[in-house]
Length: 264
Image 1 (cartoon, rainbow, N blue to C red):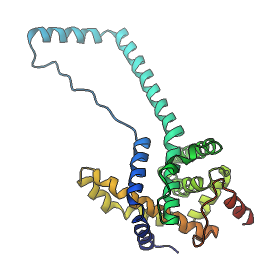
Image 2 (tube, rainbow, N blue to C red; image 1 turned 180 degrees about the vertical axis):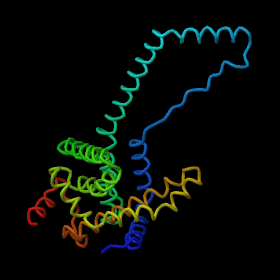
Image 3 (spheres, helix red, strand yellow; image 1 turned 90 degrees about the vertical axis):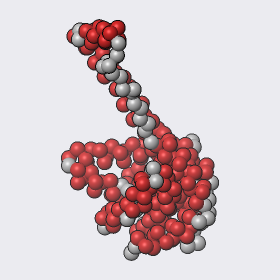
Image 4 (cartoon, rainbow, N blue to C red; image 1 turned 45 degrees about the vertical axis):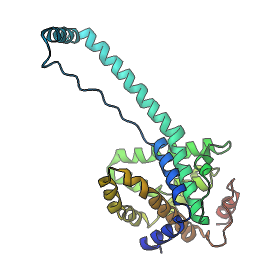
């Protein structure tokens, strides 16, 4: 059985070999996976000259026209819909795939105790992998969303039940989604609460990062990612019987894992 101290100690020991590369990967992944925000300037009609006040009154009269209001409302709804669809597409076709690539990078770097190569962040965009990764990540998000519609608690449970989906997909991007979800459930059975506590154990670092103008959060991200990669490798060993000692580099096409799954 794994412990938080064990995972963190191994993560810190391995991270010494590739920390700055891991920081770059986490930074780029964060940019590609995070949504931007914009703000409009605060316009005020008060305190101006007489001409400015008169112009402001005319503008207010213009917007009081019901037809104008309807047109503006429809235009705003269309813009909001376009933005919403753009964000969804970005999340499904880019951010989700990059997230899997990030898991792949930290899993391989942790496994071999060295920098796996920045290109692993985008490894899942290769032909023969991309659409399967997109499908799996989309289904994961969809399942969690639908379960959350029932109540918050089922959604949280499913989130942790599917916790290992991106890691399994990262290592074996061509595996069938049903097998990916089945293995994730098997790996997380009895571990959901412990993983939640593991996430909470980083709250001190997160608060420190916020106090440092949020910049500090970036520098601890490789540590967190390496710890979660250690968790994946530990559960892979305990539940799937795949030992890290003497392990060869993960097969690029997932054939080794497929054979292991068939043997089980």
